[in-house]
Picture 1 (cartoon, helix red, strand yellow):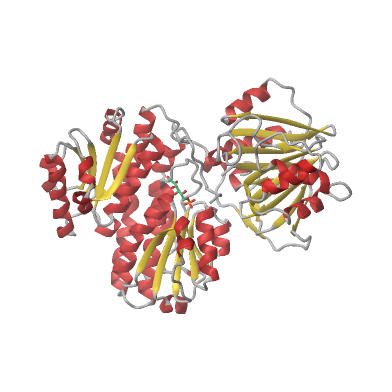
Picture 2: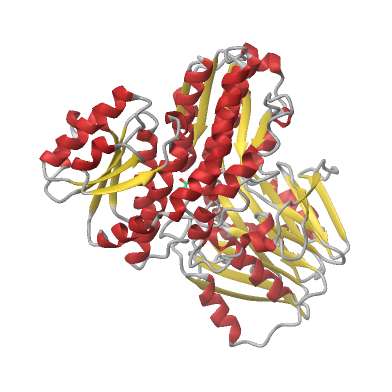
Length: 613
Ligand code: F6R
């Protein structure tokens, strides 16, 4: 939440910073602003609304001759999304500009102190106190030193960047509980909430740790802890380039990312099976003994990642016989969960920065449980703070609604489950090989769904005037139904719910009225009992006038008579079916939102990477 860019070098700072903001806009689009240091002065421009408003404002102004700058795209927490509350914020003397991602929890007390000392605060934000605290602290010390002093007084989560007219070749950054990465260039250096901020300029990055301050000049990068001691950091090379974060001719990033799913799934499988057919997941960094000792698995995650965890539970319990709980990360630590040294906590997060999930990880580690992260962003906070990590290889996900990350999270969960089965000796080698072989066919099966998706798009457009859609599933189809409903809520702003089909008669069936569209995900014939039960459920809702949209495998003719619309997916083993059954639901939501004229990539009130609790 909130995108942050910093630049020091030889290029026009404004151009570099605004281009960086364009790549980070998915992190928040309530307002955008920039500050550069030009001719010994801070030049600041900010506008409520999307980046385009700032761009329009800048287009009418002369380009300031500046090679140092910072920029911000906001997801509002404190203060309405207005010009006044947009970042950067300044001090009383107009010498300092500050941008911030996170929440400063003790800002009210700090603000009262500052006002008592005569400072004039001009916004409703928590951020502005930092500019004024820096104003006081910089009397006598460097901006870096001042930042360290201020950070020690702040509570909560923050990434901060600041510039000061007294040292025009310097950007200072700081982080606690919110993301910040350094981009190392030649004669220029960068800061960003994530690498996409500077990927067009450099693929060499430095991961910053917790409670660190970075002083960035065109030819030096100095990183310390909040007490000024040199800090440990990790350099890494970004294995994708700027073109991966472009729309590439698609109308929306979401459509591009849906289309990339066959490749993302293939990449996530790549290199994880040895020549002898055994799974090799050394990068997980958890010892086989730890995995043998594990007597319970708890999966923590939010939103779409939570749905992947719900599906993983079916696979883990079926293949390994280890009890598995799945919990919303935001609820986890507040209910005093029972964790021991033998509990394996799996934290699933695309961004690796989701605050609720990060807090669950920290809580689990405090209880001495082992934590394995399943994550898409290399070097992000959650994997860094976990005992081990299995990276998904979806590539950058820019659309706010998660698609390819979800499918690759499923693949990673299947791999972890199979690996547990392998290490603990509860699965035979040929059983594992069978599933791996099936998984390896999934990219082409997903492609098949994409190639035949036209009727789903037509259906979505025909339902644009509806107010409510229900989704039903059983077994792994239940979380798929929840995921379909979440996509529709967040993109089409429609009332949508995903129910376990068997639960319908315990209450939700009262929602069914003539004409209500109900999407039903039908399991394959492989699970005859649940398959037949859901066919009965379809008849129950049809009898009450629902418009049935049935997603069923090729060759399953038992549903044809009860489907107002039939969407075919390839037949695959039941546990793997979500890899194909989710895809039409993603396209359905995307198309419906587009038919309603919504901004598919940047739905209202949302932001990618939720870095506040
Ligand atoms: C929905 C969506 C969100 C995220 C959730 C967790 O389309 O994208 O529900 O899945 O905010 O984010 P990560 O996976 O980054 O922890």
